[in-house]
Amino acid sequence: MISLNIEKTFGFISKASVAAYEAQVKAAQEALENGTGKGNDFLGWLHLPSSISQEDLADLKATAQVLRDNCEVVIVAGIGGSYLGARAVIEALSNSFTWLQEKKTAPVMIYAGHNISEDYLYELTEFLKDKKFGVINISKSGTTTETALAFRLLKKQCEDQRGKEMAKKVIVAITDAKKGAARITADKEGYKSFIIPDNVGGRFSVLTPVGLLPIAIAGFDIEKLVAGAADMEKACGVNVPFAENPAAQYAATRNELYKSGKKIEILVNFCPKLHYVSEWWKQLYGESEGKENKGIFPASVDFSTDLHSMGQWIQEGERTIYETVISVEKVDHKLEVPSDEANLDGLNFLAGKRVDEVNKMAELGTQLAHVDGGVPNMRIVIEKLDEFNIGQLLYFFEIGCGISGYLLGVNPFNQPGVEAYKKNMFALLNKPGYEEESKAIQARL
Ligand SMILES: O=P(O)(O)OC[C@H]1O[C@H](O)[C@H](O)[C@@H](O)[C@@H]1O
Image (tube, rainbow, N blue to C red):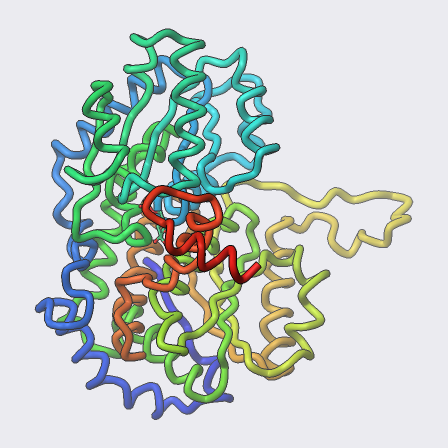
């Protein structure tokens, strides 16, 4: 079970000030539960874990098996909420060198449609030339340029390389039930498709087919992932007392820190496999809260790596930050530091110790140093990196985000600001329908 420790924020904010959020948090939880708050048409994620059926999972697993049987490589084409959740889970659970291993137990998962780099796409299509590959085209709106562009290239290559019939088998669409170009293409081509429910926004969609299908293809147990999330759904339920509800505590603490001038939350890990969990978290909190000229800026670092790059800033830079550390209790493997007679590197004081013990002391030492340096610290402890625990972590952050957004007073479920760059890009590229905008933008250049 995930636990949250906020003790090391109390030198900066008081225990009483966090406790004072109880009523407000309760109101936020009830607004979520009763669908009476802002953005209430996007609450499909709230009870998603407990409502996923065995049939849903069986359908996903069957499709995953088709791709596993027919592909050496699977491209997950999507951006933002349409790829980060899958990537976060897959990378957290995979061997760090999985794509370099000779004997593969699952297709190699590659991501595309999340940038517009010509070199990235060229190099990808080159790499795929002699590969049996499949594609999952993931886009809720079905109109996102980055993803649509990559999919256009990949679809053509897949059909040319593998033939129309096989392409039909190994291309899957995950999109809206009715709207958007991805839906039209999937229906016309006869692709297997899954629906992203209307009331689940992209950044909350990891437990829909958006995340579950790629995760199943990569060989992970989606049943356990969902079970972990469902467990957290209970642990963070509206009837759980404030002091015992980790998501309520997290939401209250971060809002109080924000009020006290801590404008930046840095999500910290000591395990590189969690890098994409942080990327997923940044979208979740950034898009949900960064609006109306307010919102905590979500940042992230991978320690101890970034202690050697960002550590100086965190220790002694502007005191507007706090840290939330994801601490993994148990590692999967055992590796001891060997003893060396010559001891030229002076490391014999570590001989016989587990590498993880060194890492844990780095973690503890960092926490104490940063708190001494004026950085409040929260700790989320998860038992280990497996499907159940990751499922818990995902839902913890989702519900924490819903509550936190309501405490902040914004609509956590829209993202109007994301359209500004798209409008300009379409105007600059002379997209039909943008004639006026094109003229106006040209006049500014
Ligand atoms: O799934 P899609 O409709 O392609 O959207 C993909 C992503 O891009 C959008 O611009 C939004 O800002 C994100 O919230 C979304 O997750």
